Length: 578
Image: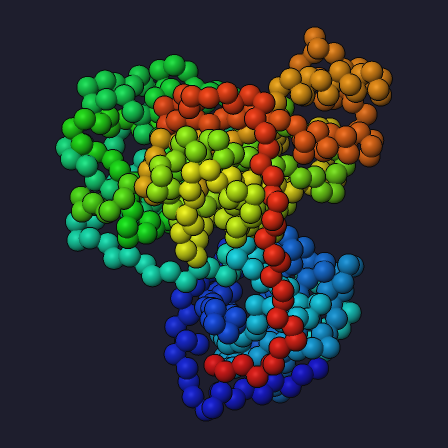
């Protein structure tokens, strides 16, 4: 048991310890507040934990891969009846039992405990080089925490699962970016669902046609954020607002109801241009000072389509929702128009994951032939990225390839959660040139599934996409792939002759997949097919048409020169200046 000593470094009170820039409540009752800040030069994260209770309770805080209480990295803190503070750097094993770490890798700067308040300030390295410590990265961080009555006499071998830990998700290592100033004429408007009666079914896509305020000249959207109706936070999965490009004098017929499973009816086909998006857990997106999303002018329609994805696994009924997106707008135009582009896999059941897989890799390609025709000579700069998968997704990343050479990755989330899908600003804009390829990979787990998981729109189906925000805006809006249709048909034919599978050219894709016995060998054959098959490409313009070219049977891009792995800086000196 460690007696906590609380000196200031060099006897000084450093401002960074008291003005931390990031903040979140860990629990719904707002009892335990976490503030944090980063020093990328020294690779240190500073924490301040503030609790609305005194010495009558104790608490723990830490990290695990996906929010499990097993194999977790935790600190625990309490104050005993003699007013002595106790702090332990611990870890839990595969049974959830706590163990005191032989290396105490947190430094506590100050602790204050009052009758109704506990406040501690501490710091640690991003990577402590300790096998029992969680290595922080710029993807999703699953924070686990607990609050318990009384004070323990010891914590070694205590079962943390019995304390019912909670989970909170954040991007802990956020990029250090200067926030642009908003012009004086910045104003807002909202696009809100019209008191939707959420259907009592697991997956619903709701469409609502409405109009934005009249703007007689061009404006720029410089920020947008989700507005989630209180109580519906666990039902609203994601939302998008599409501008309907039909011309100023044309109209779009009213629509307010469930969306179609795939595609849009002809009268809504023009509603394709995404001007705002939100997903569960997302924070507001502030565009960089050089770019804004264009809206307005006397030549452009005011009609927009709001799409809300409701995820209602409990099949609840009688719930009304008026969630939506708020837009911040200015007439002071930025240098560039911003756009959104889809990368990854096509939404199709041609791509499927067998059951009982610990890790199955999906890859979706944006090939050089598409960027050559779809991007201007000067290229584009991607400044934000939203990785998107569904319930089986565990890791998602997009690789950047130029002439066979792998460049630094566009974005990566090694601990992806479908319940936390932020649009994340990149540390610096990434330049994509004509002829570059982008490969989006999803690592999925289907250990708890008995049947095939198909690509599709339902939450029980799967997606593997990256919605990238970029400037200057171009006509290329969708650059995604799936397996070439004929190659998949040949695979089903092969499985019938080689393995006796009840596949047939008269059956649909899903029936053929379900007719196969997914032995380890057959899973390997499917993965080999995906890795080697030619592609069916969606290289689409903003109006939904494909760019000219032959997009069936395209070759997969190959990496000839992989990106060197970054070595960890271990060991390191533990004396860290504040």
